[in-house]
Structures are given as structure tokens and as C-alpha cells.
Image (cartoon, rainbow, N blue to C red; front, top):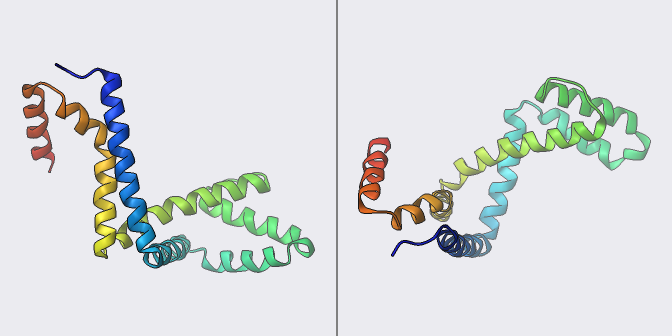
Length: 157
């Protein structure tokens, strides 16, 4: 008997929760490694964007923000224009800058993670989680569909 869409979604969510729990345990058990990777990836993301000097200055400005608020806005505008390519309000600058740096940071984090055994396990679990819906559907599909998908996956590597 085939599973309903609701049942497939249920199993996807249950398996996903277990994967998340395992990733959380791995990260907790290796907190120093994960924290180091997060810090290193942010530093590299900023350096990769060629904004190390600007972010260093930004930290200094934020420590004395009340006295230097106009200079802070000008610097954020420069960073925003360099990253995004247009001007906007201070809050829009900050939000877009943080989003762009976080995006770059995630890519670098992935690269740094696979350099360690724990990181490779986390990356494998995360990839499995990404494919979970397809996996559940294939596991509950007819044999012909499963065989077809297997051929496609083999073809795509």
C-alpha cells in the first residue's frame, strides 16, 4: 500500500529531526572546532570581499558610536555600494551587508568543515537532509520510478 503525501511528509520531518539532532550533538561535542570555523569563515568572507579595513574601522566606530554616528553611516554606505552597488538608508545598508557577508561565510564554512572528520560528517548529514524529500518519495514509489531515478542519479554522479 502506498503512503499518502501527508504520511510521506511526516516521515520526512521525523528523519529530518533525527538528522538535525545528530548534527546538533556533533556541533556541541566539537564546539571549539565549530566556533573556530565560524570565526575563520567570517574573517575570510570579509577578506574575500576586500573589506577587512572597512570592517575593522566599523568595529572601532561602533565602540564610540554616539560621537561618530555620521562617519559610521558614510562608511556603511561605502561598504554597501561596494557590495551591492547602490545607495540606500543606513538600516538597509546594514541588513544587506550582513546578509551578503553571511552568504559568503556559509560558502567558506562549508569548505572549512570538510577539512575535518567531524565537519565531513556534518556536511554529509546536511546533504542527506537536503535530499530527504526525494529520498522519502523514492523509497515509497513504484519500482520503475525508483529505478529511473537511480539511473539519473548515477548519470549525474
